[in-house]
Every structure is written in C-alpha cells, then in structure tokens.
Image (cartoon, rainbow, N blue to C red; front, side, top):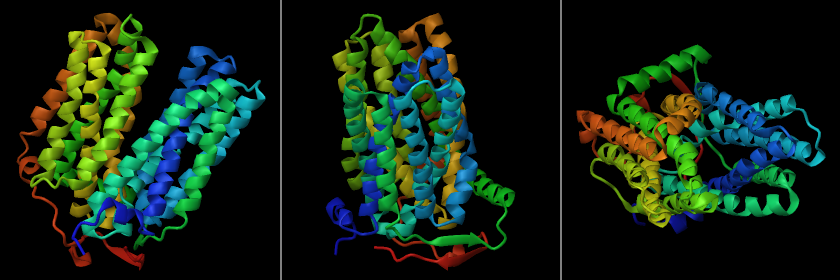
Length: 425
C-alpha cells in the first residue's frame, strides 16, 4: 500500500469518516448560527447595542482556551468534542425557542450567548489534537486536510442556506438548524475510539505550567504563534470592519462583500487538495511564508481596485489559510507527544482569542479616523512586517520535514499513564 493513502481511502476509514462528517455537520451549523444570532437579537428589538453586547458575551469564554487544552489532554478526545457539541446543541435549542417565542429579555440572551461560547475554547485545541489518536503518522497530513475541507464546505453551505432560511421562516428556525447540526455531530463523534492519556497526579495548574514550559521552550512554535496572532489581528480588522465599510461606501454593497468573503471560503476548500499533496522540505518555513498571502487583498483594497478583482484575489489567501493550518497541525503532531498536544494548541490560540475582540473594538474608530483604504494598507504592512520578523528565526527556517516514524513513548518527558490506546486505522 502507498505510504500516503488517498483522501478517498481515508474517507472509508471508520476512524476518519465519522470525524469528517461531524466537522461537516458542525460547520454547516456554524453558518446558520452566525446569521441566526444577529437577526434573532435584532428581531427581538434589542438593536445594534444589544447585538454588540450579545456578541461580546459569546466571545468572552474563548479566554478559557487553556482549560480546554487541559481537558483535551486529560480525557478521551472524542468524548470532549462530543460534550462540547452537546452543550452547543442544548444552548442553541434554547436560543431557537427564544427567537421563536419572542419577548425575551436581553439578559437571558446574553447568558445563553455566553454558554454557547464555551464550546469553542474546549473544542478547538482538542480538535487539533485528536488526529494523532485516530491515524498513523503517514496519514496525518491528509486527515488534517480533509478536516479543513469539511470545515470550509460546511461553512459555505451554512452561510448560503442560512440567509434563505431566515428570510423564509425566521431566525428561530436557523438557530434550530444549528442545534440539529450539533446533535448530528454528537452521534458521529461517539462512534470514534480515542486514547486516554492521564497524568499520574492530575492538577489543573500543574498541567497548565507543563504545557507552557513545552510551548515556551520551543522557539519556532512561539515565534510562529506571535506571527499568527499579528496576522489574526489584521485579518479580523479587514474582514470585520474595513471590507464592509469600504463596500458600503459605493463600492458594491453588502452583496459584493458576500461574494468577496465567499471567494476566500472557496479558496480554503480548494486549499485542502493542495495541503494533502504538498510535503515541503522545510514545513515551518513554508508555514511562516503562507500568511503573507493575506496581505494581497488588503493592498488591493488600499489601492482602490474594483470589487471583482478583490474577490478573485481573495482565492489566494483562502488557499494559503487552508495549507497553513494543515502544515501547522501536522508539524505539531509530529514534534510533540500526544498527551501534550491540546495544551500546546491552547497556548497557541490564546493570543488570537484574547486580542480579536479588542481588535474589533479598536478597528471601528481607526477606520473612521483614517479611512478604510488606509486601514487596509496598514493591516497589510503589519502582516508583512510580522512575516519578515518570523523569518529571522533559524529554527523556523531550518526545521526539517516530518519523519514517517512516530516518537517512542520513552522519549516523552511528562510522566503519564496510558490507560487505553485506541487502534489506529
């Protein structure tokens, strides 16, 4: 059998197919949820101010991502993911009832939004770690690519259908679709079988310190994380504020911006095929270079190009984004022991989760002060500067390609007890 099985063969694997299906279902629900929460809150009469408060309450729990990393390393990862999906399904079911019933106070919406936001900090670091429990080293990059494609395809489907559902039957039913997608995801996730890695003396603070020590002591990891955080700040500014503001000023309107954003998502879907086949000799160097592609559309908007050209340009960072996350995830899965992965990922996500809400708050006044085009150019320059600084790291430039052989358990330093190790496909 070939060292690298095709994506189609992986989809037939009982260790991969349920996870890919779960991601497709959950991401489709995310597309419904984005529209349902905004229109549902506004429909209840709480206005833009109320919507901002609801969205802020949903964003705050992301700061608990370090706790999510500990959970992902301590318990069976498919159970952690399923638990997060159960919480999301129940909460979105309650939000659907609120939107369908009407007359709901803002405080209740804020509470439900906060609870719904707890899914993300638990889910994200665990999802980026579960692949090592399901497949062998040779199949990890292809599996990561499949998961990225499922996310992109699901989000495209959800965003495309959610507007139709909201317009036809209201945001309550769109929220119900989000809840139903979570339930489907749970049914698929519980079919998986993952390893249990249990610390000999499990303590939250000890687990956090151990994860931080491993994260901070590996230079290429934290250098790339700092770069990712800077890129995330720029992209959040561009996609959240700059792009819509520019389009609303007689440059195509909301419909054109929807096409532009959709092109990025479509590019990410195509990028999964590239990521499954590309094996760079220096994966960390490739990972460092890929975010520079996000600066292209920002520079084009700053130059005032027509929106169709901007939409076409968005395909490139879409592809780059998909390849970036596959290379990043696969390299981490090779370089760190399984029992440490969720915590390493949680430290990598913390800066992004903490700064994104603050970025969105600051982006509005900045865009108003200097204009969308200047803000877009400044965002692009931040990405290019962060990329140039990252390339000064010798570890980033020289880290070799992944080996086909996994590390031996004895090579991992953290004292662990392997309770059950699931059979890999």
